[in-house]
Length: 116
Image (cartoon, rainbow, N blue to C red):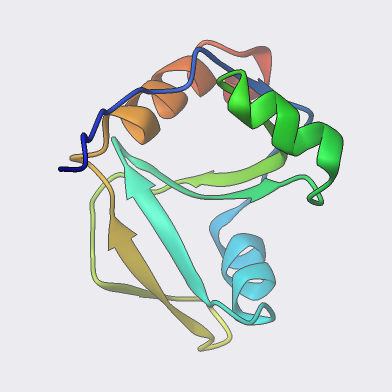
C-alpha cells in the first residue's frame, strides 16, 4: 500500500516582490494565459516560479523552493472576479485555507515594500 506524507517546504526564497496598483495587476494578469489571481488576507497576488532546471529540481528534493517574483496589490475583500477601470476582468481564487499562502502573505506584510 502507498504511504502518503505531507511535508511543507522548509524554506522558500523570493527573488523579487512587486507592489502594483489594482488596475496594473489586473492588466498584467489579463495578458497571461491563466488570468486568475489568488486572494489571501486582503492581498490579491500571483507568484511566479523560476524556470525549471535540474539544479532547481534538486533544491525541491531538499525541501526548498525558489520564486522568481510575487506581484501583488492590496484588495481588502474577496470577490470572485475583479474589474479594472478599463473593464478588464480577471478571476480570483480564494486561497485563504492554504497554510502556505497564508504564511507567504503574512511574511510579505512584514517586508519594507508593503508600506511603500
